[in-house]
Length: 131
Image (cartoon, rainbow, N blue to C red):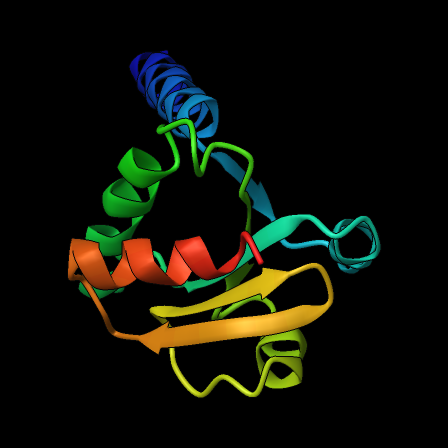
């Protein structure tokens, strides 16, 4: 019984944390169909290749979250690719490691960073999504 309650408590906390992350930016799990649709619509897109165990990824997320709260970058669609769980997608982006950030304005790749945690560099990359 105690184990079940602990499991439910952890699940609830994780659910609230996920809602908090989703509310600030437009983070969503990468989906090929949604990505192609966003590209066709000319949307600003950031592909974030993430691994839950990666300390650099953990530093990038709050920076991206903060930057996309501002008016000029709030419409950037952030699509998160699991480095461990979506290997085919990782390869399709010619990425070789987690903590890779790839910017797009519609179908056009506008830049990429690997292993970067400097706020200004990430902001400059996000600005390229605006075309």
